[in-house]
Image (cartoon, helix red, strand yellow):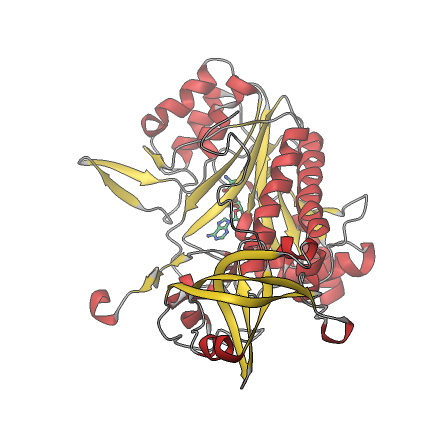
Length: 458
Ligand code: AMO
C-alpha cells in the first residue's frame, strides 16, 4: 500500500518523534509535540513533563529558556526541539518509562495555550469527589491516575475479541434502536422515531439470537440502555456489553464457553498491563483451572451456613450475597471467579429456558468477579410455540416481536449465550469504587455529561 506523500511509510509527521522513542535516541536532536503535565522551576533551571500518545518525558531548560518554561501552564500544547541526554544514574526516575533520559531544551513553541486549571492536575493522584471528576471529564481523563483505566479497558475488549474468535464466533454489528423492549420490565427508554414508538435496546439480545441461523456463532460489542431508577455504584444508564451467542450448544457447553471467554478476557488484559495493576495496587486475577460452579440455592445455603445470614428463601441473590460468595470462593478455591447457575425462571428474561427437571429454575447463569456480577446469560427457548407462549404469559405482545419470532419460525437450533459488562469488568479489575470511573462519559439519572440542574428537574 502506498498512500500519501510518504509512500505508505506509517509516519505521518516526519519531523516529530514520540516521548518513548527517545530512550533509543541519546545524543540525537529531536522534535517532540504534546501536552505540559507538570512544571518545576528552580531559578536558572526549569523542568517540565511532556506527555504524548506514547508516554511522558522530562524536558530540562536552562537560563532564558528556563524563564520561558516557568510561564507554561499545565495542559498547554507545545512543540519542543532539543537534544536527548542520559540523566545519569543519580537522577533516573524508575516510575517513568523514559526515566533514564531527558531532553535538553533548545527551542520551545506554545501551539495552544490552556486556561488555568480548576484544580491541581500536576500530582500523581487526583483528589477529587466523583461529581467534580465527571464535571471536568475532558480534563480528568488525561490525568495519569485516570488514563490507564481506559488503556486496560481497551485490552479487556481485545482479550474478549480474541477469546470469542477462538470459539469461531463471527463478529456482528447490531442496532441500538428497536421496535420492542428487549429484556422487559420498566427500565426502558422509549424514543420518538419519526412519530412511531420505538425503544433504545436494553441489550443486543434479540439481534444476537436472530444472527444464530446466519453464522451459528456470533459475538458483538454494543451499547445498551437501561433507565435505571436509582443511583448505585454498579449501574450505568448506558453501558457497554460484550456478548456471545452460540448455536448447537447444551448447558454444560455454554458454561465451559463463558468461563473460557471470561478467564481469557481478564487474564489477557492483566498480563498485558502489570504496571497499571501495580499503580492501582491490585493483584492479577486468580483464576483456577476449575472455576467453582454452584446453583443459586447452593450459594444461599453456603451463605446461611458460613456467613450466618439466612437468605435461603430469597428469590434472587443480592449485592451482599455476591460479595460473600466471592469471598468464600477466594478462600476455599483460590478463585476470583464464581459461576452461579439455575436462577428462578421468574427472575430471568422471557427467552431463558426453564430447566426441564425443575421448571421453576432456569438454565441460566451469572459469572461473579471479586464480589460483583460481571456476566449473565442462559440457554434459550428455541421452540417457536413455547416462545410465543411465554411472551404472552409475561403480558407482552407477540406482534411486537415479529422479526425476532420470524427467526424461530424458520429453523432455529438449540442455542444460548452470555453478556459481559465492560465497565463492570474494568471496575473490578482495578478495584475502582464506582462503575462511573470505568466509563469515559458515564450516563445516569443525574447527568448526561453535565449534571441536570435543579431548575430543569422541576
Ligand atoms: P444482563 O441484564 O444481566 O443480561 O446484562 C449483562 C451484563 O451487562 C452488565 N450490565 C450493566 N453494567 C452497568 N450498568 C448497567 N445498568 C448494567 N446492566 C447490565 C452486567 C451484566 O452482567 N441479554 C442478557 C444477557 C444474555 O442473556 O446473554 C443481559 O443483558 O455486567
